[in-house]
Amino acid sequence: MVRLLETSVGTLLGGRYRVKGTLGAGGMAVVYKAEDAILGRTVALKTLHSRYAEMPSFRRRFRQEARAMACLDHENIVKVYDISQDGEVPFIVVECVSGRDIGTLLGGRSGHLNERFVRRMAAQLLRALSYAHKQGVIHRDIKPSNILVTAGGTVKVADFGIARIVEEEAEGERSEIVGSARYMSPEQLMGKEATPRSDIYSVGVLLYHCLTGKPPFSGGVKSLAGQHVHESPTPPRKLNAKISPHMEAVILKALAKNPDYRYPSATSMLEDIEVAAAPQTAKTAEVPHSSRPRKGLALASALIVLAMLGGALASGLGYVALPLPDRGGEEDLSRAEPVETKEPPATPEVPRESPREGQASTRNPAARDLVVVPDVRAFFDYFAEERLVGRGFEVRFVYDYQEGYTNRGVTWATDPAIGTRAPRGSTVTVYATPEDYPQPKY
Image 1: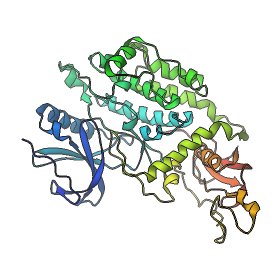
Image 2: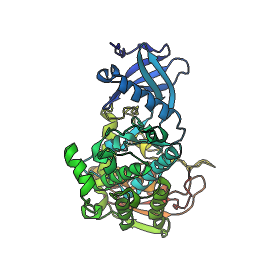
Image 3: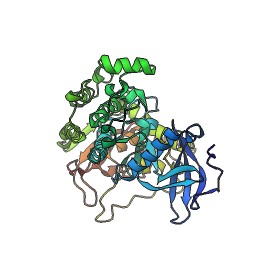
Image 4: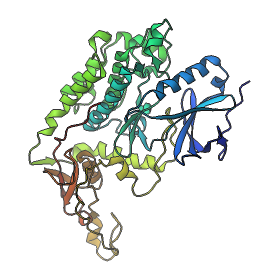
């Protein structure tokens, strides 16, 4: 019998990794947070559930996962640092990502995400898949819990746990139906060989879920298989009229039943995603925004902060190290990464005697409707709007270039100024850079 992996806090595994706690668990494995005693960095250790650890076939799949992940070196893919074992129990050592997975972000009552955010997430996901496919690796299990958004806005694709090397499957190894059936392609659900276009289908399901609040099909595994194979999804714009027609077309093409009718590659789908974003770059000098249609997004942003305070993440991924519940949590998740050439304008200090934000002043009853304008510099414009709307302000944007800030729709000032108080319901003008900075391609 294979001995279970000792997981008590403080245990040194493989003579190098000291366990600090549990991060989460998936269908096949448990993930622990640990410290590399040699390099002094925080890592995640992934090991098989005890019911699988004794099965040679699953240990073989686990080792295959480690090999598949280890050969991938891309900024949008969770990195593998080491492959080790404690006694007879194998485990892999991967980077411990600070951020949230898409499944967590979809957990809010609004149920769906902003299209602009989804496009940016999808672009990085597709770059990661394009790279992996060129290395001969198919993910096979694209789903919300396997897509992370880091504190700096970078997407990390995790858990190539059931990936197979394409050449190995070509030798006659029959594919197995393993993974989340909600997001799997028809050919996978029928037990056929998965191809890069199978991942394309799963991306289509993911985008559908992100923008409408639910996957195109639901039910048990048998019911899901029949729907994926035979039924057409409800057009996403019927569920969310705010989805652009172009984005709907991209999703429906990815969801074609016949793989030949889908995008031929992740790169070609990426090109269409970027075309969908193109009209957003031609903004006028002033674009008024109303707070009313964005209440759901403001709520989703608030739920991110609540999730940060909620404790350990129990997703199917488990590679996530949550940020501490401090005042920087929301900013860390929402901010862009400005290219600093000079110091940005200083933020005005709020007088120490001022009452807390949103707190009524006992000396001046009229002050109870005054709210501090938050610091939204270096946020993407849509995150800045969500935060201001959440404070009760109306928002309008003025787009202009600003030295020290990259041209990606990054905010750099407000009027009234950051740190001052303004009446709830009043309009805050947000100054942001245009969105004409070319995105990197891999």
